[in-house]
Length: 268
Length: 202
Image (spheres, rainbow over the protein chains, first blue to last red):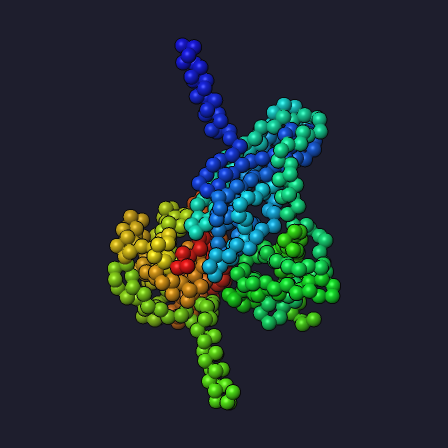
C-alpha cells in the first residue's frame, strides 16, 4: 500500500514537472521562460523573457517578419495585480532567402517584457505563466506552442540577481531606443533616402509597415558631413509614396533607434 | 559606337527590362501555359472574359494546412467556382523541395481534402511563380475578365498559421471577388502575402 502511494507520488511529481515546465525542447529549438532575478520584490517591476535557442540554420522572427513567416506570440497568465508590458523585440538581422528577405534571429534571442509586480503581492511564491506560439523556419517552417511557467519567491527584499542577468542586459541593449537619433526622409528615383545625424559606417532599416520598401533590395549607406545617408529601394508593388516611414534604424550593428518621420517628395 | 548599333542596344535593353517587370495590380496579368495534375494544358489567356483566381500552393506548408485542414480554402473554391470563377492552384515547389508533387500525388491530396479548384497546375521550374513574383504559400491573385490583376496579396488579414485566427478574419479574396463580380473597383487591391516562402529551385 505504502509502496503504491510512493509510486503514485513519484508519478505525480513527473506529471507536475511535465505541466509546469519552464522550457520546451521542440524540434530544432529550445524555448524557455526565464526571469532576470531569482526573486521578486513586491512593488518593483521585474523583467521576464522568452528565450529561443535555435539549431544551426533555423530562425525565428522579428515583429515584422519580412517576406514570410510570423513573430512569436506571448500570452501572459499572471497573478492578480501583475501586468506585463509590451513584448520587446531586440533589433533583428536581415536573413536573405533566395529572392526574399526575412527579419529575425538565428542562434538565439530573448524576447522580453517588464512585469509590474504590485506592492499588494502576497508574500510567498508567485507563479508566472506564458503561453507561447511560434514559427521557426529553415528551408521549411515548423509551428510550435507551449505553456511555460516559473515560480518565484516574492518578498520585500531587493531581488536576488540570477544567472540570466547578463542575457537580459544584452537583450535590453538591443531594444530600439525611442529617441536619440535625428533623421529626415525624402523620396526620389524610386528610393527613400534617410539622412541621420550620427556618424555611421553601416546602417540598416527595418520597416514596421508592409509594402513600403523592397525588403530584399540592398540598402546603401554613405557618409555625409553631419552623419549618414541611407538609400532604401521602394517596393515595386506599391504605387503610392507613403506619407511617413516608420521602423527601426540599426547603426553599425550595435545600437538601434525607432523612427517615425514624414517623407518629403521634394529633392533636398 | 555607331548610331544604329546604339539604337539597337537601347532597344534590346528596353525590351529586356520590359520582360522582368513583375505582375502588378492594375496591369495585364502575364500569360502563361502550364500542365495540370491530369496532364491537361491550361493557358491563362484561354480564360479571358472570366474571373480567375491564382492560389500558390504547397501542401506541406503550415500556413496552407491552416486553410485546408480547416476547410476554409475548399469552401472558397466551391463557392466561387459555382459562380463561374476559374480557380487555379499553382505548385511552384522544385523537385526535392517541400510541396513538390506528381500529378497523381496532387490528385490524391485534392481528393483527400475534398478540394475543388478548377485545376491544380504544376510549375516545378518555378517559371510562372517568378513571373508573378509569388512569394509565399498561400499567395493569392484575382484577375478580372479583361485580364487585369485586380488583387495581389494575402488570403486574409490574420497573418498566422493558427486555425483559430480564421474566426473573425476578413478574407481579402472574398472581398476582391465580390467587387470584381459586381463590376466594382477593388477597395483593397494590394496586401502583403503571408505564409511559407515558395520553395523555388536553388
